Length: 207
Ligand code: GRF
Image: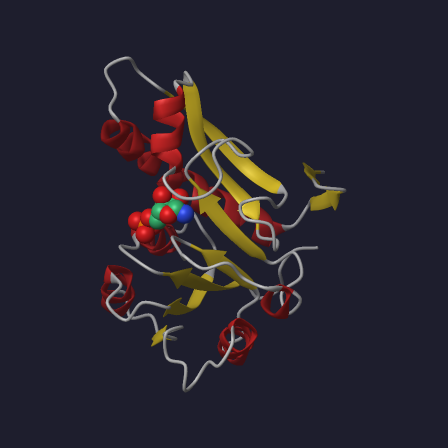
């Protein structure tokens, strides 16, 4: 089923270059979507300025504010409420550094996606680019996947490979992966919004 109103919410914690790629793809009409809100758990996230500059509503939900969010579930419920209040249909995590619980995920069934800088299921978790470089793989890449309660473990939507060169250090590799991410994420979102896909078990299949 296509996603009717093509409305997105992006969750960030930091610099927001993937958010920027989404904003740019919408502006360039390669992604037909409306970005209704950008939410950060970190008040100082650079991505908030990117959103403001593009005229997109921003919100900070600081998970450290225990007066507002007594538990992880309370935080996740508040997050879901803010997204729903803004008509968000597809939630895109872009460097959002928190695990989401079932309290959140059950509000957006098969409608929360993430981008990860490796070819999952290899190298989940933080520092995936360094993990791949240090392991000595010859190919790594980027993955867009559905978010489940398992860290970086949901069904895979799209992947793209990136070669690891002998001359690479972890930083040069990370920067090539990042360029790939910026291409891949808007493409995956467009695919998800357009429909014509289904989940067969954990296999994302088109047609
Ligand atoms: C990206 O490498 C993304 O794959 C990972 O976190 C990083 C976020 O970078 N989940 P940015 O904030 O989009 O620049």
